[in-house]
Length: 112
Image (cartoon, rainbow, N blue to C red; front, side, top):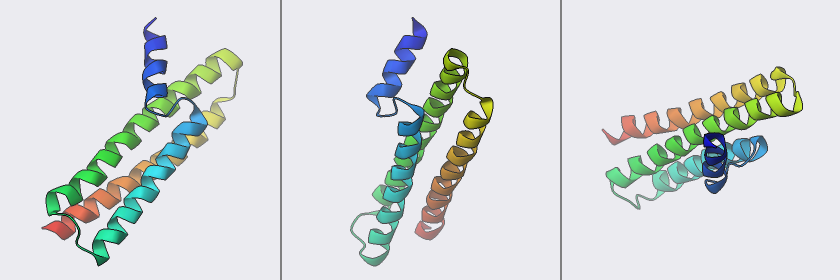
């Protein structure tokens, strides 16, 4: 029963499968990049908001990574998918997480 609720939670957040999880991580990375570009040229928001948006996107990427692992392990168990697919996806997801973290770190260093 708990596994069904976890799946419903991830689906409600828009990461209802492994493909959607990776797609949402990429969208978060692009949004982070666009946010920084726009605010680099035009100072539209105060520093607190400038930091909050990448922090929230980083949190969403962490949730998407957890969803990717959840759905990947579920596919491995139910459909006998190879673990290699899951590991490659985790590497890609980890890279996107690292890039989002670097964006946040950059914003923090610039804002001081």
